Amino acid sequence: MAYIILDADSWQSVTDFETGENIETWDNPDVDAVKKILTTCRYPGDIAVESIEWTVQTAKKLDTYLRPDLMVMTFATPYFVKAMQELDAEQEEDVNNRLFAAVDDFLAGTDYQPLIIGLGGMANTLGTLESPGLQNRLRGGISPAPYIGLFNATEEEIRLCHEIPHAAIYTKERIITDFPQMNPRQVAETPDLILMADDGYTLTATKKRGFLLRKVPSVCRRLPVHTTLPVPPHITDVRRTVEEAMDTGKRVALILLEGIGEADFRIPFAHTSCEEKWMVYDQGALQYMAIFTGKRFYENNFSMVLRIKPNDEYSTKYPYSQFEYIDDMPTNTLGRKAGKKTAAVGSRSMFTHAITQADICIECQSRQTAPSGLLSLINDPK
Image (cartoon, rainbow, N blue to C red; front, side, top):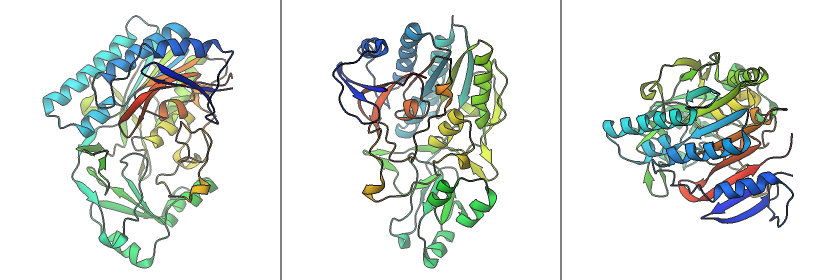
């Protein structure tokens, strides 16, 4: 059985990962150990810069307990701080320096081989892609991604989309032609049109819980990488690179830095490709799925744009993982590598446990920057 532990200021509950039902008794020492760790790791919040150090200190405690072969660390704090706070250049520099100092603090004195990836920089919000004649029918993804879609489009709506500035337009026929290996489920989920926004532009909904998105993720066709391992040539090669290192007995720290591009990187770096023809893996689920499954976007079940479904089509499984957005929970992931202990800690809610699928995961429990404590996954034995 896989367990979810919820912790809100040391009030704790243990539930079944798949069903969400409360569990009163268990015979799993990892549950007891992680419950103790959680009581010492209060999360400062998504837009609190102190969450950078929270990620490091929590990872240190989990490392002491588990000594995993793979430690995944997800730092979403730079993304949230830059997107939702009005920072000047000096303040942004301080965030970047603080982040790399924290990463160095974690790695110092360990035998981890680092693989550090900046998932892309941030662009000033320049505007939104909107057309009054579309009646709010444009759909986006989970986060402010560059991809915006239109389902069940009429000829008039297609014409209106072509008049929207600051975006390239791709029809469903073009997408299927360019990526003929796309799995049938994703073909069915692909909208009639996809608009790929220019840097700084996003969908009409630019506010979350009253926060104005001052910056949005940049469209990055290559990502900065620092590692003592071979540099993965493509984002989907990260999994293979890490697994090959673990197969030779190395311990690996895979460290993902959101909101960090080439200009923000504070240590020497090479590059890994983050594109497929015209398509770019955006900061969010597409990047995480590519890294941890090792598959191209068209091989996974996660679409660039999310279709709004009738209520009876949403899954009721994994209620704490928001996987009503993704048809299948990824199971064959880097975190499930047989014979190796894996862990994940991070300030990226949901992706840290649901996409890494590590043996033990600890993350903030936040929805649209509203913190509600901590969540931990104690996964099924491999």
